[in-house]
Length: 66
Image (cartoon, rainbow, N blue to C red; front, side, top):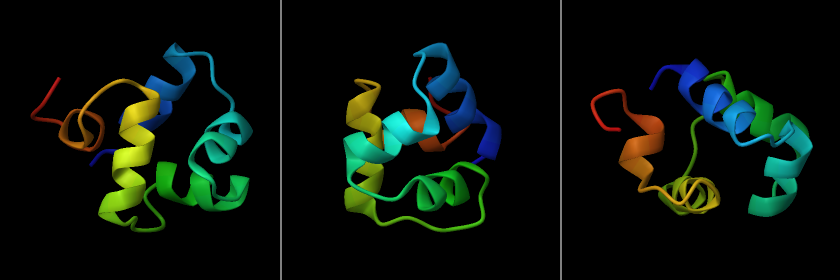
């Protein structure tokens, strides 16, 4: 995953990092670590993040999907 893809989706949807963190039930700092590729995330958390964008996890976290 390119870290910027998640960030760009977040910005496109006008969410702050804090908004995202609250929606998926994690801290803001943990969310940003995921966004910038510093932390790995569980599949369950990937699903929660993808649901925020109404997409499948592959479409959010991998470059080969739209």
